[in-house]
Length: 161
Image (tube, rainbow, N blue to C red; front, top):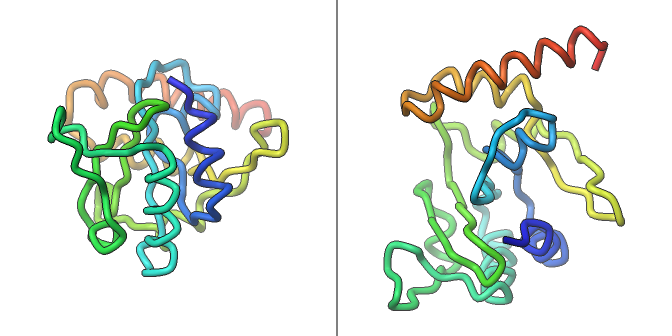
């Protein structure tokens, strides 16, 4: 999996999105494993068009339709549902909304740009908001990870970060 290549493709296409989920948590220092990238993009037509172009460049197709190659299109990327994609660089989940109906405008105010080195800067949902979201989830996996998220947040706050 090459998460950096996926994020670079999105940034190169000037896609507006917020990085959420496990990769965002790892960037904040939470000790979890993750096997995909989760993003919440702005769902306006222009951004959905740029996202569709970036996804084509990544050879993205819907995972649930493999081995048939059903590719995402801009019109569908403006909907609030989930697009669970496989790219040549690994899995990418494009989420129209996350728990509580939170969409890009709700999340972007909690997502400062983070420098991932070599000039790659992405908007990453802050750890406090990731914890708040994780608390609302009911899957066993999410409940099991919550303690790690909360402990990391407490440690960062204790260090003044």
